[in-house]
Image (cartoon, one colour):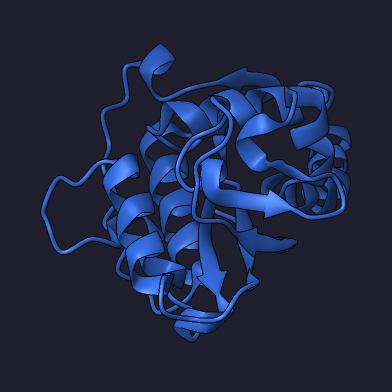
Length: 201
């Protein structure tokens, strides 16, 4: 039986906050793993964003019995041949590196390459209904990497990802701006018709 609860299948607090805001008008009651006492870590060992997102969505749906929405996202930098991509959250040789460590490491790897350092954020969202198929959608946000950090909002690579048309980094955007322009926002926009169909069904 389909309930009106939608599990946001991530333990990343930054993603939870963004997704709660993006999904608030879908007609679902949004729940997090912490709220239902679900302690689940899913290894992201897929070869594509779709594989990782689907793996997480299915695991959380099976564990909770709820419709689950998971995402996998990455930053692809043209001068680094598309790196770090799938490995964006692990883009540093040091185990346990922080977001700030990863940003500094990226800028260090780019410093001898000509600017602009064009890049895009990619997000894939997977929606899993227990005992049914998984549905996949994507979103992209294009910009460039800059050497100096700007802004205190967001997380991950947001302070060094510039949107040239606004002359703002992702970390300088207000939440309502970010929720119109980000890769995750665009993927959620593509997911909303699927979610509405599920909630009606």
